[in-house]
Length: 227
Image 1 (cartoon, helix red, strand yellow):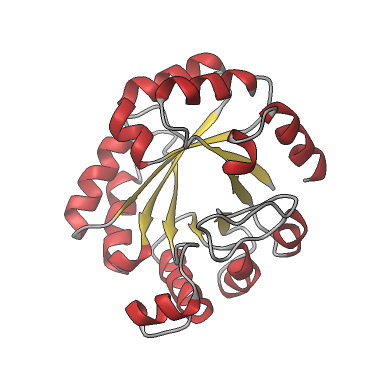
Image 2 (image 1 turned 30 degrees about the horizontal axis):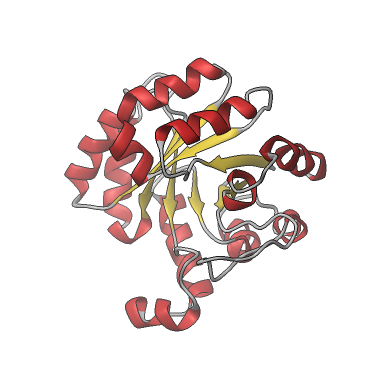
């Protein structure tokens, strides 16, 4: 299991200061909408300059018609990143189109698809998708697997079932992790490290418990010691 730290601070400088405190750790960094829209490619390069061994997950959740998604994926592959994602809701054809477009990219990034956002509870998810979260997340994961992608974004609660329906090598990346039972905030389906390990999660994404801490390096150290 690998740790991915969310860079969700309000400013570029705060994110860079956080990363400098974590420069000696073997971790992934998640760059989302706000950070990328505000700080762009230069920010990605600054992160790599702090430690070239950092791995970067660009969390933009592509969702559009197949060709537009493939065009965007092709451009993303030119960035200094190691993983990016799309929405499985875009459909199997869109995901397959993305993978066909970038299949010959040297050292192509890992590509994963969002199943159900962890901000959903069953009621709000069913209102949109007309199915419960667990069933639909597994269906999305099977579509993603059959489209040739590397894995999915899901809650930790669906990870084991997803692997049973795809492959043990199929990646599950799980946000909403509160390593030691911290407050859930705006997340509905949160898990701790024990549950994530039991569910064979490959990547845990941790944000607030790290970047809100007075000593983020000690929190990262404690997490790594427990995974």
